[in-house]
Structure formats: C-alpha cells, structure tokens
Image (tube, rainbow, N blue to C red; front, side):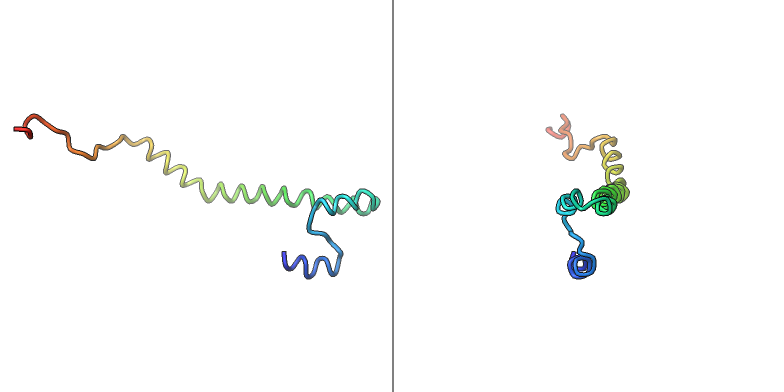
Length: 86
C-alpha cells in the first residue's frame, strides 16, 4: 500500500479506493471507463487465488479430522469388574 501511495498516485494519479475510481470514471468518458474494469476484476481474482491457496494449505487438516472421527472411541478408565471388588 505504501508503494501504491508513493509511486502510483504521484506518477499516474491512480486511486486506491475502487469506489472513488468508479465515480469519476462514469463522468470521465470512454477512456476512463476502459481502465476502471481493473479495479473491479483485480480484487475478485485476488480473492479467488486466496481462497484456492487456503483450501490447498488447510485441506490436509480437514482430512485428518475426518479420519480421527472415524476411529472408534477408546475408553480411558478401566472397567470395574466383580473380581476387582472382592
């Protein structure tokens, strides 16, 4: 974000807020509307990549949980028998 503010705004006049870019593009003519698509598409592509990365990273954890659930429960306390009471 710092680099965008330092270089993007100074050299190209870009805005960081998509809402701020879309409003002036509506009134800026065809050239501005041709360029504003990036402010709409780029966050969607970034979100899709992040979701895919998270799924790839954490899918093994979910598989291990399912395997653990499938195992029968083990008793931790010994059973009381009639022989141990005597």
